[in-house]
Image 1 (cartoon, rainbow, N blue to C red):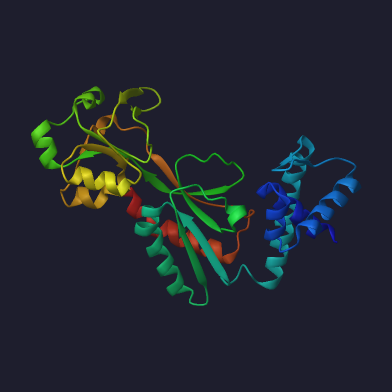
Image 2 (image 1 turned 90 degrees about the horizontal axis):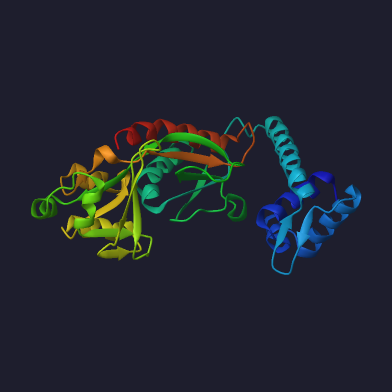
Length: 299
């Protein structure tokens, strides 16, 4: 087996933390992947992976080797792509993941425009409210909201969204509008996603942070349900600005405590490709930046 293919197998096994999953990604059998890694370790005279019955993890040497292996593989792919013209015209299938509601409202219009512009392309959209592992699930691009924990990803900023407290005009008329965060303790609250009977809502920026411990009257696993309950006048909820932009514009919800809002959260599109991305990803990123920068600036 050539060294380039061996490096691809090593990267896949390291990223998926398993020989079976890494082998599937490389379209090989697990025994072939296991043999390739064993031969690589033997040639180097060092163990790259720790093996257990449940999981594979990198040794210190393996972590250093993974960084260099990724760089080498990406540079070779970029060289090949330049020669065969992949950077000139988008071809193939593009897969993009994003949070469910953000994906429906913002990513879908971008993808429709993209496919109209490049009719030879095909696409897959995966909208889920969880962090999708790009390597393990074979995804090209991801839209992420918030600060990135994985520094190995290449991130392109698209804009920002805010965390806002909202209530219906009817609720605010009956119960009054909170003037500062501590006033929330006297209101009916609706909490989404985190099924914890006691929650801390943080306000202010890093230089002037305020935390209020609250007990929601209603907890729900979806933001949609929390927003609907707020629209119906049950209480106040806290969500991201894009999630209630339509309700605010239509006057069905009003923002409270705006001067205490935390610092905005970045919206970024991320990928794992090297310095020179393929035409299909680069074209989508350029289109997303053009379409979303204006939309997000209004939120």
